[in-house]
Length: 99
Image (cartoon, rainbow, N blue to C red; front, side, top):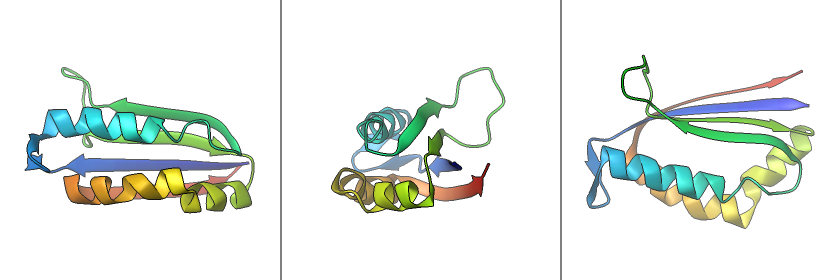
């Protein structure tokens, strides 16, 4: 099994919307990938007011294997959201690890 964790900081404004609106849109777009083959766990969360957060959106996911993660990355549903995420993010951090 492999864990895939990604965190994004968003621009204050992009794609005609503010950060909060884009965070919600991004969450919805990411969640459209939750049922792709090979995914064991898929959680998307937004920074919560009043709680410490250095990033705006986080994805925590678990995959059956490295091959399943690679298939997710190449899947058309995932590929379709990449342009939006690229347009609204200012920073991205990612870590994959086997368990």
